[in-house]
Length: 216
Picture (cartoon, rainbow, N blue to C red):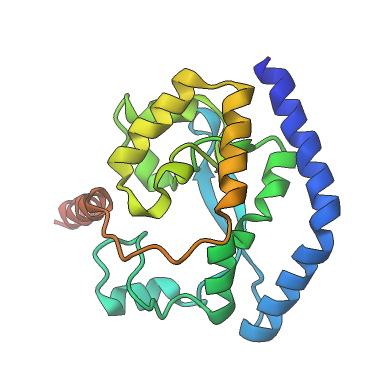
């Protein structure tokens, strides 16, 4: 059943890429005109069983967002702040409508992701997963998922881990269809409130402590 469903995901992604090609071209042109080169944001993420892959998104932040984060003194390296200056004007619209995620249909077509599954995490965080956390890696990551329709950016990673484990334990095609429906009806959402994920802050501090230890 899972293998057949994965194949259906890839077929659906192909159809959606063809149908949405005009929209994706328009978004790419908008980013290029409004904020210069670098239409796509490409980042290594952990796929099924922790295997790295290059996840694609439409770029929604300025080019020097990492340096700007340091200047702003943001404790949560993966979080946002109120009226975040790192997000471009078109990026705000893309994030609110989830259009920035459309290039991930290519990841689905390549077999690296599914339409539904736990959101793929960055490699430094995955390296610090506990065995329980790592259970979310038992399935392919998704463009949307159970945690996304039950809080998304408003919940901590600790809560996401719980929701993702529930998804892994209770997966079915019917559940995926339910998640896709809930995603579709909330696609044009308001910007989430400012939320600091303390787990991300703790991880950042741990990385900094390790770097200091190595330098000593």
